[in-house]
Amino acid sequence: MAIINSYPTITPTSGDLVLITDTSVEGNPTKTASIGSINALNYSSSIDLLQKEVTLTAAQMLSLNGGGSIEVLPAPGVGKLLALMNVMTQVDFNSVAYNFAAGGIGDNVSFYIGANQAGGPGTLDFNAAADAYYISDPLAQFSGSYVPNSNLTLQATAGITVSQGDSPIKFSILYREIAVS
Image (cartoon, rainbow, N blue to C red; front, side):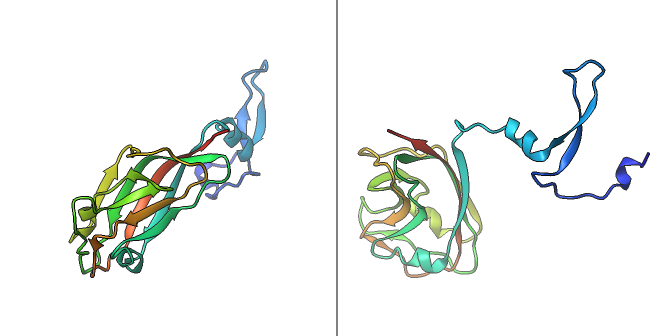
């Protein structure tokens, strides 16, 4: 018999087979199972938690000057709502800090689901002059009722100004797509 560490290491695919011991049968016979069949044991259609990595460029961030909107997650489809569970924001500092400024008390940069503010990183968090990380957990609805099939956007109100900055902004978003009737 070969020594176990003499076998080559591979990245398994769904159709690859592994050896298992069937303890439900007398004598515990050895059998094979596919990687796909093992993964299926851990799958449930009732689990709707998703994760997405999104990177916004400096040009996209600068487009928020004077008010603007950037789609971060597309609408989930008819009969579904987006529910944000957690967002990790990273300012991946390059060389020039952003200079986001609010013209008035109500001015901000925030996440929106459809027309409803959904919280997220603070407006001035984007002005970091070094790598910075912020976690918004969980994100709350500020007002109004969410509308099914609405996208997630990063929006700036008209009083927001920004004229410099060259760092990508990275989001790691944990969310649900909830089926509604």
